[in-house]
Length: 230
Image (cartoon, rainbow, N blue to C red; front, side, top):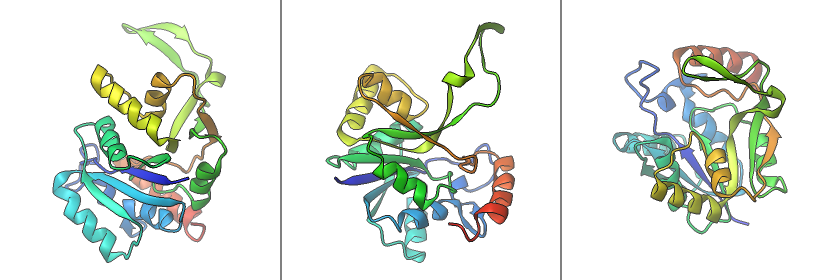
């Protein structure tokens, strides 16, 4: 079975209030995305990687890969105007692979074991998720409408894997219908309700770096829990 990977690196860092995209900010002394690339460099099952990046930062990404001697088969392409469009572009560049893994450049703490657990899981489609430890209510027009059962809900994490052909087709259909989704598990399920998507136990360390507070938090996580265990 062939496996490809889409890395979403299209952020331009608006919420970080930094002059460079957040994937290039330093964490533990090296660019955030390098933490991801160093892990997947060790995973031979991942045969090809497509990084979706802003056009003006593709050359910088290519230099980072070269300067850090990343040998994985990596293609850097221009991402889309949205996360969903970028994933679609990545999938088109992986057309023909059996399985596609989708990940975000700013989730640096996923371990090699977690990648392998996802790849080797017997389920064709699988994601990581965490239980929600707080009350979640549905509201409408500023008023509570429904009390949701938190034991039936999960906090969705990446990486995720899907049947490559079905994921590409789902993105094609979403584009035709003009539908938007916040991530690929919801998109995939919408178009493939008959296909089971397994939920693997996620990790509290699997933080997505979006704001300056996230970066500060991740520096502490890296120093206290990650160094020497990658």
